[in-house]
Image (cartoon, rainbow, N blue to C red; front, side):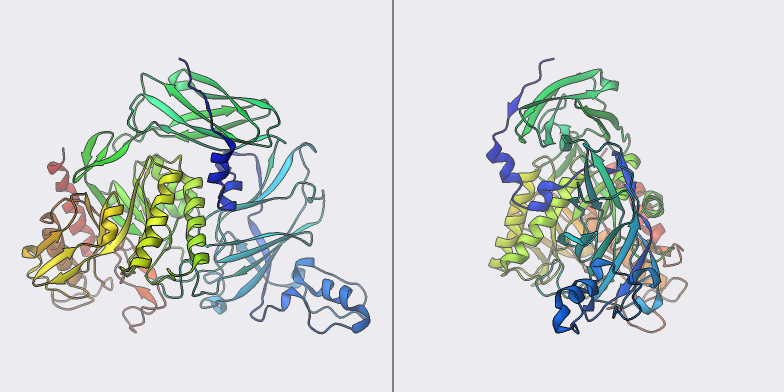
Length: 609
Ligand code: GCU
């Protein structure tokens, strides 16, 4: 089979590198040779940011004192007369990955700076290789130093980033210092106000990656848009001088195709195949894909499928589907704190499976890579979202650049995951012209980076003259019209819900991205007593009857799988700092409404088979 080679001009590659971090990102780190820096780190809580340097330095010795007192120098002294006011090695320790809020009660509400330090030795396999330090995520702003040298900074609490450290790593006694600041800021993404806990810290994996001087940094391999028998995509090699032959092999399909990449550009390919088993929730088929160069072989497990829309239908591999979903925050209530590992993902996705879901909305930010890869394996379709949440500063160019960068990092990391079918650019943002320009910019950026998936956002409806109306201008720019509605919780009558009237201004698939209500697990009473399980159960019964009748309805992801921590939920004896809209309690106990949703999903498929 002849592969069609197209060398994409460097300018196009540079176009994709507008957001610097996404341009440098090393993908598929789980399948690369790496040295884990997870484990016990020392930390210093520093609300006054003393760690940059000590303001009390002697006139004659300013430079030395200033340097020595900066925490990133991890300074020690045997000179008993010398003034040094910190010592990482005598400071407390904390686990990485993991937020600090759930590891030390004194830090439960802490918002500020904490300095982390990890010492390590490293025996480089080959001194011609290159070294990178990679972070799965740091919330919210990270400044990274190695052996006293500043590597750089990163803003955004839910996407990966890496820095090259070739030539900086010693065989012994390296010290990696990370300044983490989780203060909420007006211009941030998200901004000051969110209905989730502001977990700070090095919240995901950290690793040292060793790569050949010329290495395969990134690639996109999937089903060609509009075809069921062509695998296509691109490969990106780093530090190519002249020409580099790469080979893409998919042993189970008997495929092996050579391509040539030159001068740091990327190379595109199309590979015809006859016998591809498509990925779906019923059959989540993953293929081992290998990319080989003269210096290395990178392996990945990739599913091939298509996702598209046709009028009101969502088509998976050309067939209409209904998204039987649930929304999920990145918290494993059984363990407390930010979820980060495969074990957390299994707890959450197994509950979703028990609900009868074929789809999850990972709210309101990109979750860790482990749960996304689990979704690939378990056959769970995914809505992945960036935290453009509520009232971000739509007038601020820096805020837009931050949102674009987080979107690019999420797409760069996960574009080979068959489970992801939707990129979401926002949640419940108040409509305005400036907000529309901001979101259209993000929707266009998502499609530039990946035109194989659907783009959506959680909009809102409004109510006029007895009719629920969905006419948000953004509906014209999205593939799926999704919106949150809380009939029976934030207004509206549960009794009348099934007969409510809807006017949806778009002939597109409609997904109810949120509905729900709170219940304290174990609190029982009548269906009109708020906070009882019976109230929540009745709310689900009535909302589901209503949803079935909404025009073009093609899915829902009720709010939310499990109770989660929120500083906004303060009702003593009921909330106590927890949002209680979960179908599972913070002790992992299912509430009555869990079974209401499950029986709805058991029946809904009949309409779409
Ligand atoms: C909003 C928002 C959620 C929030 C939920 C609630 O729709 O999207 O983040 O937690 O409502 O009020 O519980």
